[in-house]
Image (cartoon, rainbow, N blue to C red; front, side, top):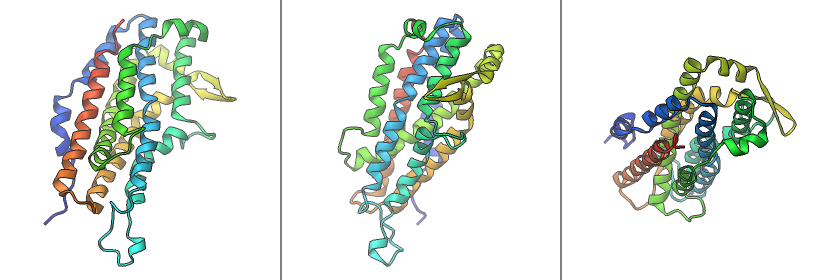
Length: 276
Protein backbone atom coordinates (compact mmCIF):
# COMPACT_ATOMS: atom_id res chain seq x y z
CA UNK A 1 0.00 0.00 0.00
CA UNK A 2 1.45 3.43 -0.89
CA UNK A 3 2.30 5.69 2.02
CA UNK A 4 -0.36 8.20 3.01
CA UNK A 5 0.64 11.74 2.09
CA UNK A 6 -0.68 15.22 1.44
CA UNK A 7 -0.35 16.61 -2.06
CA UNK A 8 -1.25 19.94 -3.59
CA UNK A 9 -4.44 18.34 -4.90
CA UNK A 10 -5.59 17.84 -1.30
CA UNK A 11 -5.26 21.59 -0.71
CA UNK A 12 -6.89 22.74 -3.92
CA UNK A 13 -10.56 22.70 -2.79
CA UNK A 14 -9.77 25.20 -0.04
CA UNK A 15 -7.59 27.33 -2.31
CA UNK A 16 -10.22 27.36 -5.07
CA UNK A 17 -12.92 28.59 -2.69
CA UNK A 18 -10.67 31.11 -0.97
CA UNK A 19 -11.34 34.82 -1.60
CA UNK A 20 -8.90 36.43 0.82
CA UNK A 21 -6.42 37.44 -1.86
CA UNK A 22 -9.19 39.12 -3.86
CA UNK A 23 -9.94 41.21 -0.76
CA UNK A 24 -6.23 42.09 -0.50
CA UNK A 25 -6.16 43.35 -4.09
CA UNK A 26 -9.35 45.35 -3.53
CA UNK A 27 -7.89 46.97 -0.40
CA UNK A 28 -4.76 47.97 -2.30
CA UNK A 29 -6.74 49.31 -5.25
CA UNK A 30 -8.92 51.42 -2.99
CA UNK A 31 -5.99 52.81 -0.98
CA UNK A 32 -5.31 55.71 -3.32
CA UNK A 33 -4.49 58.23 -0.58
CA UNK A 34 -1.14 57.84 1.20
CA UNK A 35 -2.71 57.51 4.64
CA UNK A 36 -4.99 54.71 3.45
CA UNK A 37 -2.10 52.79 1.86
CA UNK A 38 -0.06 53.24 5.05
CA UNK A 39 -2.87 51.75 7.11
CA UNK A 40 -3.40 48.83 4.71
CA UNK A 41 0.29 47.93 4.64
CA UNK A 42 0.70 48.72 8.33
CA UNK A 43 -2.06 46.26 9.20
CA UNK A 44 -0.53 43.64 6.93
CA UNK A 45 2.88 44.15 8.52
CA UNK A 46 1.38 43.89 12.00
CA UNK A 47 -0.53 40.72 11.09
CA UNK A 48 2.68 39.14 9.84
CA UNK A 49 4.43 39.83 13.13
CA UNK A 50 2.42 37.04 14.78
CA UNK A 51 3.95 34.22 12.76
CA UNK A 52 7.53 34.05 13.99
CA UNK A 53 6.54 33.35 17.58
CA UNK A 54 3.85 30.90 16.49
CA UNK A 55 6.14 28.92 14.25
CA UNK A 56 8.98 28.72 16.78
CA UNK A 57 6.48 27.44 19.33
CA UNK A 58 5.11 24.81 16.94
CA UNK A 59 8.57 23.57 15.96
CA UNK A 60 9.47 23.13 19.63
CA UNK A 61 6.24 21.25 20.33
CA UNK A 62 6.96 18.86 17.46
CA UNK A 63 10.61 18.30 18.40
CA UNK A 64 9.62 17.39 21.96
CA UNK A 65 7.40 14.47 20.82
CA UNK A 66 10.07 11.84 20.31
CA UNK A 67 7.70 8.99 21.05
CA UNK A 68 5.17 10.25 18.53
CA UNK A 69 7.50 10.17 15.54
CA UNK A 70 9.47 6.95 15.14
CA UNK A 71 11.31 5.32 12.25
CA UNK A 72 10.27 1.65 12.00
CA UNK A 73 13.30 0.91 9.83
CA UNK A 74 15.80 1.94 12.53
CA UNK A 75 16.93 -1.05 14.58
CA UNK A 76 18.58 0.99 17.33
CA UNK A 77 15.68 2.11 19.52
CA UNK A 78 17.39 5.17 20.98
CA UNK A 79 18.16 6.39 17.46
CA UNK A 80 14.71 5.76 16.02
CA UNK A 81 12.97 8.98 17.03
CA UNK A 82 12.36 11.39 14.13
CA UNK A 83 10.69 14.29 15.95
CA UNK A 84 13.61 16.63 15.27
CA UNK A 85 13.53 15.66 11.60
CA UNK A 86 9.84 16.51 11.35
CA UNK A 87 10.31 19.75 13.30
CA UNK A 88 13.22 20.87 11.12
CA UNK A 89 10.99 21.42 8.11
CA UNK A 90 8.87 23.84 10.15
CA UNK A 91 11.80 25.49 11.88
CA UNK A 92 13.30 26.16 8.44
CA UNK A 93 10.97 29.13 8.05
CA UNK A 94 11.54 30.28 11.64
CA UNK A 95 15.26 30.68 10.87
CA UNK A 96 14.44 33.43 8.40
CA UNK A 97 11.93 35.02 10.77
CA UNK A 98 14.65 35.57 13.36
CA UNK A 99 17.75 35.93 11.18
CA UNK A 100 17.39 36.53 7.45
CA UNK A 101 20.07 34.45 5.76
CA UNK A 102 20.71 36.89 2.90
CA UNK A 103 21.81 39.92 4.94
CA UNK A 104 25.28 40.35 6.47
CA UNK A 105 24.00 41.01 10.00
CA UNK A 106 21.20 39.52 12.07
CA UNK A 107 18.01 40.85 10.51
CA UNK A 108 14.73 39.60 11.87
CA UNK A 109 11.85 39.79 9.43
CA UNK A 110 10.06 41.92 12.01
CA UNK A 111 12.86 44.49 11.83
CA UNK A 112 12.79 44.41 8.03
CA UNK A 113 9.02 44.92 8.03
CA UNK A 114 9.39 47.85 10.40
CA UNK A 115 11.98 49.35 8.02
CA UNK A 116 9.46 49.05 5.18
CA UNK A 117 6.77 50.86 7.16
CA UNK A 118 9.13 53.60 8.30
CA UNK A 119 10.41 53.91 4.73
CA UNK A 120 6.87 54.29 3.40
CA UNK A 121 6.31 57.07 5.90
CA UNK A 122 9.50 58.81 4.79
CA UNK A 123 8.53 58.57 1.11
CA UNK A 124 5.12 60.09 1.84
CA UNK A 125 6.64 62.86 3.94
CA UNK A 126 5.54 61.69 7.39
CA UNK A 127 7.70 61.70 10.50
CA UNK A 128 7.57 58.67 12.80
CA UNK A 129 5.52 60.75 15.24
CA UNK A 130 3.00 61.56 12.51
CA UNK A 131 2.82 57.90 11.50
CA UNK A 132 1.53 57.13 15.00
CA UNK A 133 -1.60 59.05 14.06
CA UNK A 134 -1.82 57.98 10.40
CA UNK A 135 -1.37 54.20 10.64
CA UNK A 136 -4.56 52.76 12.11
CA UNK A 137 -4.40 49.16 13.31
CA UNK A 138 -8.01 48.03 13.38
CA UNK A 139 -9.63 45.48 15.73
CA UNK A 140 -9.78 42.90 12.92
CA UNK A 141 -5.98 42.90 12.77
CA UNK A 142 -5.65 42.29 16.50
CA UNK A 143 -8.25 39.53 16.33
CA UNK A 144 -6.43 37.87 13.44
CA UNK A 145 -3.14 37.95 15.37
CA UNK A 146 -4.81 36.27 18.35
CA UNK A 147 -6.21 33.61 16.02
CA UNK A 148 -2.76 33.02 14.51
CA UNK A 149 -1.28 32.44 17.95
CA UNK A 150 -4.17 30.10 18.78
CA UNK A 151 -3.69 28.24 15.51
CA UNK A 152 -0.04 27.66 16.30
CA UNK A 153 -0.89 26.65 19.86
CA UNK A 154 0.93 29.34 21.82
CA UNK A 155 0.23 29.04 25.53
CA UNK A 156 -1.48 25.67 25.15
CA UNK A 157 -0.39 22.11 25.79
CA UNK A 158 -1.13 20.61 22.40
CA UNK A 159 -2.85 17.27 22.13
CA UNK A 160 -2.32 15.34 18.91
CA UNK A 161 -5.20 16.87 16.92
CA UNK A 162 -4.06 20.38 17.86
CA UNK A 163 -0.44 19.55 17.02
CA UNK A 164 -1.29 18.26 13.55
CA UNK A 165 -3.79 21.03 12.99
CA UNK A 166 -0.97 23.47 13.77
CA UNK A 167 1.14 21.87 11.06
CA UNK A 168 -1.65 22.33 8.55
CA UNK A 169 -2.25 25.87 9.79
CA UNK A 170 1.37 26.75 9.09
CA UNK A 171 1.27 25.11 5.66
CA UNK A 172 -1.71 27.28 4.79
CA UNK A 173 0.09 30.39 5.98
CA UNK A 174 3.03 29.74 3.68
CA UNK A 175 1.18 29.05 0.46
CA UNK A 176 -1.13 32.03 0.94
CA UNK A 177 1.69 34.35 2.02
CA UNK A 178 3.55 33.50 -1.18
CA UNK A 179 0.54 34.67 -3.16
CA UNK A 180 0.01 37.74 -0.97
CA UNK A 181 3.49 39.15 -1.38
CA UNK A 182 3.46 38.57 -5.13
CA UNK A 183 0.18 40.51 -5.32
CA UNK A 184 1.51 43.37 -3.16
CA UNK A 185 4.74 43.60 -5.15
CA UNK A 186 2.85 43.52 -8.46
CA UNK A 187 0.41 46.21 -7.37
CA UNK A 188 3.13 48.55 -6.13
CA UNK A 189 5.31 48.09 -9.20
CA UNK A 190 2.41 48.60 -11.59
CA UNK A 191 0.57 51.41 -9.79
CA UNK A 192 3.29 53.07 -7.72
CA UNK A 193 6.54 52.48 -9.58
CA UNK A 194 8.06 55.73 -8.30
CA UNK A 195 7.35 54.68 -4.73
CA UNK A 196 9.02 51.31 -5.27
CA UNK A 197 12.10 52.97 -6.74
CA UNK A 198 12.28 55.31 -3.77
CA UNK A 199 11.93 52.46 -1.30
CA UNK A 200 14.55 50.37 -3.09
CA UNK A 201 17.01 53.27 -2.83
CA UNK A 202 16.18 54.10 0.79
CA UNK A 203 18.07 52.82 3.83
CA UNK A 204 16.27 52.97 7.18
CA UNK A 205 18.30 52.99 10.42
CA UNK A 206 17.09 50.55 13.08
CA UNK A 207 19.25 49.14 15.90
CA UNK A 208 22.45 50.56 14.46
CA UNK A 209 22.07 49.05 10.98
CA UNK A 210 20.85 50.43 7.68
CA UNK A 211 17.96 48.37 6.29
CA UNK A 212 16.69 48.49 2.71
CA UNK A 213 13.13 49.78 2.82
CA UNK A 214 11.77 47.44 0.12
CA UNK A 215 13.71 44.30 1.01
CA UNK A 216 10.98 42.82 3.24
CA UNK A 217 8.51 42.79 0.36
CA UNK A 218 10.99 41.72 -2.30
CA UNK A 219 12.46 38.78 -0.37
CA UNK A 220 9.02 37.36 0.38
CA UNK A 221 8.09 37.05 -3.29
CA UNK A 222 10.39 34.02 -3.39
CA UNK A 223 11.17 32.79 0.09
CA UNK A 224 7.56 31.90 0.96
CA UNK A 225 7.46 29.37 -1.87
CA UNK A 226 10.52 27.72 -0.34
CA UNK A 227 8.88 27.76 3.06
CA UNK A 228 5.73 26.16 1.67
CA UNK A 229 7.80 23.37 0.11
CA UNK A 230 9.44 22.74 3.46
CA UNK A 231 6.08 22.76 5.27
CA UNK A 232 4.62 20.25 2.82
CA UNK A 233 7.66 18.03 3.34
CA UNK A 234 7.17 18.42 7.09
CA UNK A 235 3.53 17.32 7.16
CA UNK A 236 4.39 14.33 5.00
CA UNK A 237 7.29 13.39 7.27
CA UNK A 238 4.85 13.66 10.17
CA UNK A 239 2.57 11.17 8.42
CA UNK A 240 5.48 8.95 7.47
CA UNK A 241 6.90 8.67 11.00
CA UNK A 242 3.69 8.89 13.00
CA UNK A 243 3.68 6.26 15.76
CA UNK A 244 0.64 7.31 17.79
CA UNK A 245 -2.69 5.60 18.34
CA UNK A 246 -4.76 7.42 15.70
CA UNK A 247 -5.39 6.07 12.25
CA UNK A 248 -3.18 7.84 9.69
CA UNK A 249 -6.29 9.01 7.86
CA UNK A 250 -7.40 10.83 11.03
CA UNK A 251 -4.01 12.54 11.28
CA UNK A 252 -4.32 13.67 7.68
CA UNK A 253 -7.79 15.07 8.40
CA UNK A 254 -6.40 17.05 11.35
CA UNK A 255 -3.67 18.52 9.13
CA UNK A 256 -6.16 19.50 6.43
CA UNK A 257 -8.50 20.97 9.05
CA UNK A 258 -5.67 23.24 10.17
CA UNK A 259 -5.04 24.27 6.59
CA UNK A 260 -8.70 25.22 6.19
CA UNK A 261 -8.66 27.07 9.48
CA UNK A 262 -5.82 29.31 8.38
CA UNK A 263 -7.56 30.10 5.12
CA UNK A 264 -10.58 31.25 7.14
CA UNK A 265 -8.43 33.42 9.44
CA UNK A 266 -6.65 35.00 6.48
CA UNK A 267 -9.91 35.63 4.64
CA UNK A 268 -11.51 37.37 7.63
CA UNK A 269 -8.43 39.53 8.14
CA UNK A 270 -8.24 40.51 4.47
CA UNK A 271 -11.95 41.36 4.30
CA UNK A 272 -11.37 44.13 6.87
CA UNK A 273 -7.93 45.19 5.63
CA UNK A 274 -9.10 48.27 3.77
CA UNK A 275 -11.70 49.57 6.20
CA UNK A 276 -11.39 53.20 7.28
